[in-house]
Structures are given as structure tokens and as C-alpha cells.
Length: 473
Ligand code: BG6
Image 1 (cartoon, rainbow, N blue to C red):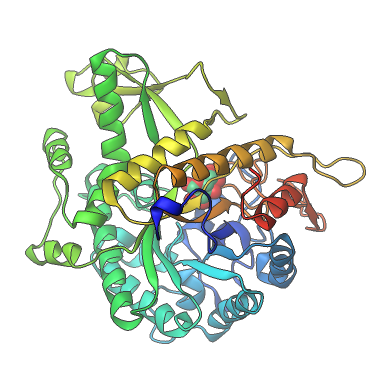
Image 2: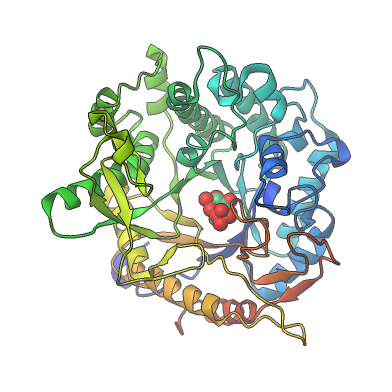
């Protein structure tokens, strides 16, 4: 791409939106699908009634939903394959043909409508059987089973799928015990094992990338990283450093390992300080170094404003740690940013921070960026005449797209934007109370109703933006 001439969205920009299997499909035990950790996680959540059993029924309504994508004008759709639809136990000798056929149908329809499928291979939903037999990602065996599964997907769908994402939000996975279904056992505590799991996920990612490049040399593959961009709360040097430290440990460390194939020095120092030990085999470094992603997938929602916290866990002042304290031995905490507005769920809205985020990622890796997630969760309400006037989402969308446009003008290579989510889905933390989509689904937490699809005002707004390739933003 000739950057000197780039003043706006490139002609072939991928305008998209996304969803994941457990949040959209439903049909949790249909056509041979096995249970996943995400199913159990959703059944157990006491504050959420809506679960993965029906979700928004994409499994049965995919044709209608993909037609709505076409009508909106999307030219890409990011979705995930549920590992347990393909291999119900995660490691079966034969694939489950009915599950395989479902994704064939989805992909074929997308391709028919010229909508590029962007496929995530693992989005929070490990087959539960693998948790039962070897505690999932805690075991190295999981890497082999994952590789077998992705190999199958590459072979089966690789003729039609040109963009692949190995893992969604590895750091979030390695921090959520219930999401991975981890079972505490004697001599195997969560705190001790989660860093080992994280290491196994790095290896799984690397093996998938290497395999994909070998058997599908013309396609692009990368990962989707949760990137929390940080600001220091004040210009006090300790706040500035705390903000950098959190951003590095939480976000850049993951991207650095993907990109450089080794743990960065600051992360090694952090592990030493926190007494984190990981079993690394000699050949692991080679595995990590031999896999280079073709793009960086960035899931971006918000910035966090950081203050240095003088109380530290290590100083045996555990009782003084404030509730907002997080990570890094308790020495950083997130504080409210008075310059930003917040959603009902306390997520700051900060489009200017998005431009900064894109600049930082591109300047560090110089890899094309796919914005794999960015969106606004809100409690939309249906008017009496069946409309959703979500002007807040329109505002969010326009300002975040404007930030991408500016980042492109700054020289950042952004090749795709996948708004989260195309249709209302089960929010992973707030069920159906928190809606993200351009298309409303008529169900709520307690009542399945008729699951009718209704276009929100933001649907038409995105349609107009895409029509002009973003030139009128
Ligand atoms: C991302 C996940 O972390 O955040 C999505 O990849 C999720 O699956 C999104 O839906 C928003 O979070 P939540 O908890 O509001 O659904």
C-alpha cells in the first residue's frame, strides 16, 4: 500500500461485525455437539439467567442473519467455530459430520454474498471433556488436541476462509478460572497453573500458525488480543510507571510473545518478582519463534486510568488493599477518569484513546491490524412501534471509526473493522441485559419470546457509512 496516498479507508477495507459460537448459536447439545466450558460457565452464573442453550439461536437462524448482513452491506463477518461441534469430546477419532456441515453452510452462504469469513478457532469454549480428562489447558496434551482440531478446520474450510484467528483473548482466558472450567486439585492450584496454561496457549497459537502457513500458504492468520490502553492518573512518575507497567504486563507481553517468539525481559523480571515459575521445554522457544502472525487482531473497548497503589500484597498489608486494586502484586489500581463518560457497566467511552491504541500497536510491530472487536454494550429498549433508537451506539460507532480513519492518515495499516457484535448476543458477563448488536433480538434474560430480529437505528447508520467507504465520517 502506498501510504503517501492514503488519506482514508482503503478501497478493499473489510467492513464487518462479529459474534462467537457460544454467545450466538444456541443449540448447545444439538446434532452431536459436546458440552463446553463456556456452556457450563453460563449455566452456573447466578446473576445471569440467559445461557448458551438457546442464546440468540444463530444455529437455526443463520440464513436470516446472513441475509441481514448482506442487506447492511458487510463485506466480512467474524465468527467462531465451536471446537465441540467438530470434535464433541475435543479429541475424538472422527469429526462430527453434522457439526462440520453447519459451518460449511454458514461459510458457503457468506461466500455467496461476497462476505469474507474471518474465523476464530477458539473463543473461550474448550470442550468440557478435555477439562474432565486432563484439566484443559493445564496439560500439554491440550496443545496436540487443539492442533488436530485446527488442522481439520484448515483442511475442511481453507478453500473458502482466507482469514483465521487462532485464539481469542488469551490473557482473559488465563485469568478466568471458571471460563476455562479449571478444576482445583491437590498440588495444582489455579494461581500456580494459570501461567502454565498461558504458556500452553502460546504454543498452541504458534503451532496453529505454522501449520496454517504450511498447508494454506495464501491465507492470513493471527490472534485476537484484548488490549487495554492505559493512562496515568497524574503526572507523578510513579503513576506514569504504573500505567506503563499494567499496559505492558496485561497487553503487550502477549503481543510481544506472539511477535518475537520469547517472553520479553520485563515480563521475565515480573515473573521472577511474583515467583511465577513455568515449565518451558527447550524446543518451546523454537516453536514460538517459528510462527509469525500475518496481522495483529485487536479487541479494543476502553482505556483504563491508573494510579500507583502504595499498599502492596507482598508487604503483608493484604487487608489494606482496596477493592479496585488489580494485578501486579496489588501496586496498581484503576481510577475513574473525570474526562470520560462511562457506560452503565462502568466502561469508559474513549474514541480518542482508540487512535492512540492503534498507533501504539502499529509502531511496535508494523503488522497490519484487524480490529477484531470494538463495540458498545447498552440496555437497548424496544419502542411500542418496534424500533430501537440507539443514538448512543451511532455516536460510539462514528467516533471510533473516525479514530481509525485518523490512525490510517497517521500511517497505521488497518485492514478490517469488525464491530462487536453484528446481532445482539449473550454478553459474556451480563447475559442479554447488555446488548451490542446492530440487530435487536427479541428475547430477554428470562423469556425467550419469539427471537425476532429487528434492525436498530445503528444498523442503517453503519449501512450508510459502508456505502461511502467511510468517506463521510
Ligand atoms: C471480549 C470478548 O472480551 O469482550 C467477547 O471477546 C465479549 O466475547 C466482549 O462479548 C464484551 O464483553 P461482555 O462481557 O460485555 O460480553
